[in-house]
Length: 195
Image (cartoon, rainbow, N blue to C red):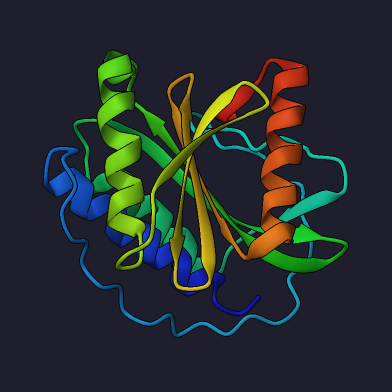
């Protein structure tokens, strides 16, 4: 999937728009088109840095590190709202060696890990990332409340748990399968939301 880098940048711009509006939504800045071209990504088992939300190992899926430009975008993402965000990381999601989407993990500072922030931030982020006319829906997947929307042909899944906002972006049943597998694994291990 060649557009993951651009979508990760769009997600970062959407979060920036939400953060600038105090979690109340608003139109995000349009991201610059990604200048990176991705060859076949090589799977890695990413090791979280201190303070960074940890990716879950999900059977049948792997992650690859983003380009250095996308990694920098994730670092800048945490700086868009230094009051609330501690760290952020972005990764490509692979299934059987093929890139199917992207995942962004945003660690919220402990003093702001509140139900009020969850209620305000996740729907605002989904609205900011939606294509014009796209519906924002809520669904429970393996006990986790997930907000779902669309950006062009891509599905966007967002949830907040245990101090981490997780954003997953991809197309159709491939990315839906990853979200279900991720949340099933998280539920089974007690490690929802990047805990």
